[in-house]
Amino acid sequence: MPFAVKNLFDVAGLPTRAGSKINRELAPSAHDSPLIERLEAAGAVLVGALNMGEYAYDFTGENVHDGNAHNPHDTSRMTGGSSSGSGGAVAGGLVPLSLGSDTNGSIACHPRSAGYSV
Image (cartoon, rainbow, N blue to C red):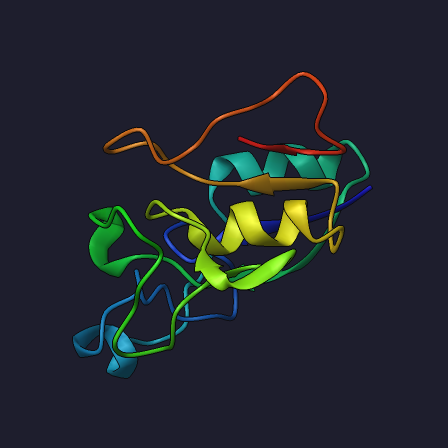
């Protein structure tokens, strides 16, 4: 199963930017986060790290450094929440599963959705 992650999770070989400009100079992570390790051990395949609200404190999906995350079904709308890239990737059918985080209610799972952002 392909999956993606909010760029708040450490991914070996990628910098963990957390949506912030000042983190751009960070060295790439040396290890994957435990959730990524568990998913890959179960056979899932990581396809990438996704845009997010700066430092996971955002309600709209806006990111002045990397661009805004838009609703894939109506690009005049935002995806909302700091896990905006994760929600947009699942809603757009890019991946059936994406890891997000919930600082202020930014992730949800609807039982009729095609995939889940967790």
